[in-house]
Length: 462
Image (cartoon, rainbow, N blue to C red; front, side, top):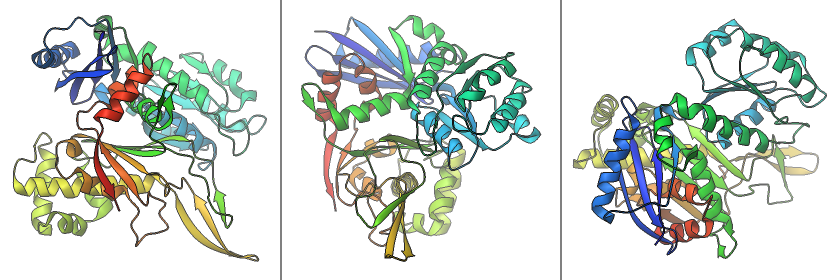
């Protein structure tokens, strides 16, 4: 036996997963409240004690961890044009597992500088201009950032002509120069910046979040939790040497504060009559809906979907639904332990999935040209995706996970939203996806086999 411990320091729970890397078996999982306000090791020890009750004593040969504790990796970014370099900066940040607080476009002003200082980001991504293009804006923004207080480092990933000059302007803070996130018009190059963001997270943010003591107890804090999720999803979709994947997929992680959506699919136009508009979407894409969550962002679900939809899905009156929503927003640790709350949670989770996946997916519009009717696609076309993976407490602890996940499917009444049309639903009942992303770094075949075995299939949604 080769026991490996995988740890996810979450904002609310510290989750531990034990696997036998030799046999490719899941040995057990457990979770305890994250004690980030005192000593994060206390929560870890509590989780390990619960794990030992299930597995018995284990001598772990390796220990790996990811973290989103204390708010995760909080980033701000700026670019030139909203639809181009600013969008590229956002994609680079999200793809690295960050929580993007704000993306600015054009020139930063005094109000922006005050906002940046108040928000205290962990990292700021300075982008803007294609190589050989506009340098005025990125140099101006570097000067503004130089005058902002705070200890956050700056990653410079804009016009290469101005990169070193930006670095000299920002000599009062730690800087890193990367390749331009958009070196040519319409061309993305976000992987080098994503790699640098993760390195900064490991070298700097771990200490800032009070995880340095915990890091001494394990082989390494390898990545932000969303990065671990992305690696798990890509492995599950594509497979690895010696083990096939399950194909293109959409994954939804519904949390208390945010809802994350991942898609592993090309998503480009599939018909000759369709033209693509905007930046090309990354094959591995992540979006975060910061206003959509089951407790801390519960009012965001209601605002996005409407109280009438909440009432319709829950079977509660609008007045009663509103009363319960207000209560849950105030008492965020409330569990759905009554029939009313269970029905309300079902409605809220369904609408969180629906809203988040709709925002993540592309849309189609009709346009009339000299050649006749043409379709214009913006974003990813996910209609052919045949696998939907769901996780999060509101889905893994309910027998109605299939019904909730079905809201990630295309609504026949809204055919221009490019969501999956028919898919098998897989549920992460034991909360192992981030752990398998960690394991994929050293034992991808084992991680993939465990996921394929443990992700329970709840049938297909038509």
